[in-house]
Amino acid sequence: MKTWKKFAHVDAKTIDEASSILRSGKAAVMSGGTDLLGTMRFEILPEYPEVLVNLKTISGLDYVKEEAGALRIGALTRLQDIAENKMIRAKYTALAEAAHRTATPHIREMGTIAGNICQFTRCWYFRNPDNRFYCTRKGGKQCFAAAGENRYHSIFGAVKMCFAVNPSDTAPALVALNAQIKTNKRLIEAEQFWDMKVPGSTVLAADEIVTEIQIPALAAGAKSAFIKFAIRKSIDFPIVNCAALIGGGDARVCMNAVYNKPYRSTPAEEAMKGKPINEANADAAGAAAVAAAKALPGDRNKWKIPIAKAMVKRAILACA
Amino acid sequence: MPDDKEKNPDQETKEGLSISRRTFLKDAGLVVGAPAIGTIALTTEAAAQARKTAPVAQQAPAAAKLSPTQTTIELTVNGGKYRYAVEPHWSLRQLLRDQIGYTSPKDWCGGQGACGSCTVIMNGRPILSCMTLACECDGAKIETAEGIAKARHPIIQAYIDNNAFQCGYCTPGFVCTAKALLDKNDHPTEADIRDALGGNLCRCGTYQRHPLAVLEAAKNLKQGA
Image 1 (spheres, one colour):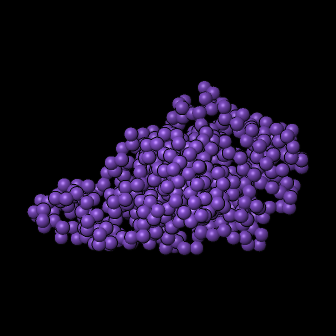
Image 2 (cartoon, chains in turn brown, orange):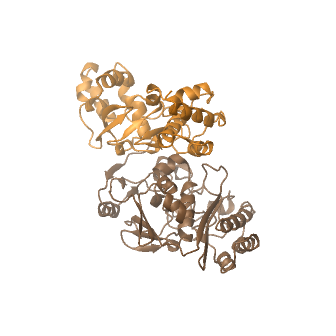
Image 3 (spheres, chains in turn red, brown):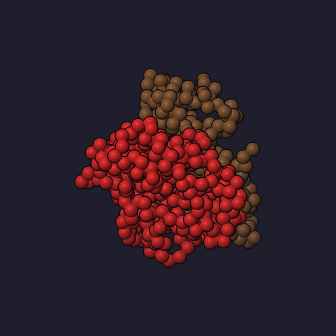
């Protein structure tokens, strides 16, 4: 087993302390560590952090509570706790199911909701050990997947020349549920939270730390659902996943693992607005969702398009 | 075959001592219960210096120096209390195997968190010891497969009776995950078990037998067997 190169380790006591260490230079914050420690062990990133800031020692960030009908989840809440929470399962089904379908039980016991939405992409060029591919995501000039092995890559084009996809399961659920993500600096709409960064996946500033996830109460009659397709049901990252929120006069549909960031499908939403949930309508929405989809040259990721269509359809049907 | 030789920053120190580190720790540490920090805190640099300047017999006192990067943690492993000085970049698995001497947390996937072979129970949660930093385990209560076997938990006999393994390499991970499940849920369904064991890989492919073993263990637990 590869061991980690040396780094200093700080147990942060407050978010401000962690943030100030981030400001001071080559540092990284870590909660569950299941993503970051992997990138460090295999020296995937161009820069190896000199200081690792442990956020788990900050108290009061691990909670699930309902306030004025809205759901508030602390950044350090473990995915397993979200998946098992009876209230979340009943009212915010898409999120509970997404948390439940994330990774393995062990990783859910360790990994946190904030870590899950901030994780790095799984593109195999990006993840190649020892930073072998200096790609656009690392500040380079080339996306190796564009002409290389890209069977799991974006079907909705590139963002700043990067065809990698966002692998998070909870991210589309948060977008569908119209969540807001609170950091130590601001409140960000879930839909605006992700972006192609070098090398990250979020719009967070260098010293910004997620502190809370807020989800508004669902309108009366609205239901949410999450469907995921992966090679191995119990372990793998999604090939395509989809979360939907239908009813109460609203329709929100968001896929992930199909684009650089969670991909909210307005055509699918339009197709469902004010319409009853049935096979024909869901099928039409699925077709609308992938109408703009386009396989990369060589068609190696073409197989993802019918899967995406089916995921949208099934997620909508599951909201019935 | 998985390469289970983890590079230990302290490995070099073994060469300078007349007895192996693990044996020494077992004798000095496990018998006494709480090993002195000094014996563990020997860094590579300090050890190399000590070898140059002192005969073997005088090396132990030199080891008492704490490296500036080390922190001291106290943890409970299988009911025994331990106090160790650890480097920030040590994994919990490294600490358990190379320092304390519990060898059941295996390495298979190379530290990617993909196989579950290094599973231990920390504060009631089944976690991956290869993806956990040792320095973050201060105050933790840890259970390994050795502790579960020593406590004669019914899961062990159920695994034996159901032949729920072939080569046995992944078994400690499965046993820890299954025990954590039974601690939380004493009447699991087969679906619960398959869900809970979903993160443990078995390349011999004995998957069909794990649920049988866990179901039997749950039954025996209820009967107080």
